[in-house]
Image (cartoon, rainbow over all chains, first blue to last red; front, side, top):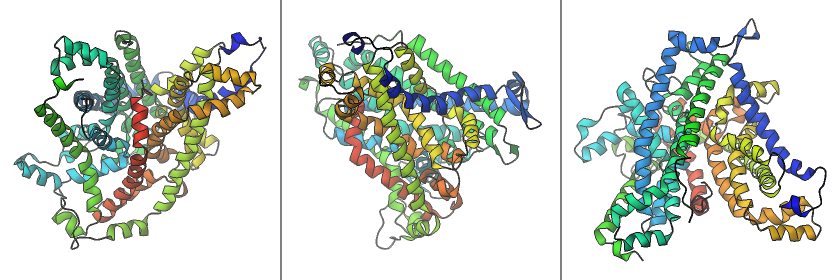
Length: 309
Length: 279
């Protein structure tokens, strides 16, 4: 706007001044290190100097059984982590949001505030609190299961290889359910009354109204939640680290890409830290996340029609 | 309007589901805080009952205050969070203003470039960030954390703020220009006050991940002087694995400040989300 109404000036310095601080910090601390990490994955430290080795680090990562087993294990666990989130977190989030948005519901503000509480807590609190609750030492969870007559189901979930990852995924779901709930809730509130009224005139009410009218209208929000979940899950680290330590026990059964990267980069116990291998793993994570974002942008988002009212 | 669709069983059902989930969401928090005020025998004997005069005990809190330097960690967290927040809001608002107000060559490209960081997590650059901080001698300083969190918060802040700044009326800004105000004065005196509500939303979104982050304090500033409260709590919990009183007290101390802040700001946060700040 401004450019047309004012006489042409050669350089509008204020634009540069407004942009410079953000662009400088963002470029120096985020973009360049990201590029630097991608670049480092092509080098290796030989005799105290970085030597270009091409794809050698990736050959080690996928060819050396010590590395590749760990990588595929972490990737598999990460996919399972993501699947649990998609199957549990998002449907429950949508359900809660749908209930919350029902007209003239009492205490809606209270429910909203309370259900969002876990999301603001730090991973350290969440990880440790659940570790204590699920611990057989304390006896809270066997006691609770006893109340509903299911005590025989209790096992130390976090200590068993076959359950630990699922248990931690559910803890993560518990923590983050507030985000899909809020975003869907916002989307449901933005559906205009006329649409709902028109549906009611046509006799579409209750469940049918939700499935046929509201759900198609909130699909774009569900798409955004899915990609946010994807990026968050494939970048997760803190919860596993606080609950199970950097070794992601028992026997690496809860190892995901974040903890795998941490061990490769810094080393842990028997393993020596290797920044170049760390960079190679970070590059793989970058490619996975990039692939997910591209699938979302080019396949999903373009097909979801945004309704303008 | 929709009284036709409302019926008593449906309302009861909705409340039942929401109440059940509220209990699930709050139960662990209440359990931890409740048990932190109990003696060891009380914690293990009757974990699900509130502290009674018989089981009431503050031994956990005295251990925590005697052992960890929590007040100092708390101060570090506060410095890092407030400073990063200040820079994110200031730089983010400036860049958002430039992108939404002026037409210049490369505007769209610049917007896309700055939005990249919303989707690609900064954590993936950690290897090179650590090298950069080592090279510039910033390891184990709060400055390193502030820089990283500023960069981390900027993309989303710019994106949201530029959306809001588009809504500020052009007439107002042009009136300012006619009165001879400089572009800087227009930004600081006219536009900033008008977008203050959306700044609060951005502030809450930026603040929570910074305060709760464990990864960067662990990697960039693990020294005793620069530990944040999250890292301090993590290490403390690791040392006191068997001292349940101390663990529960430390967890409660970590929960309470965030909870208090949340209760104060929850209205703002929820209004921010539901007003379509995040699309």
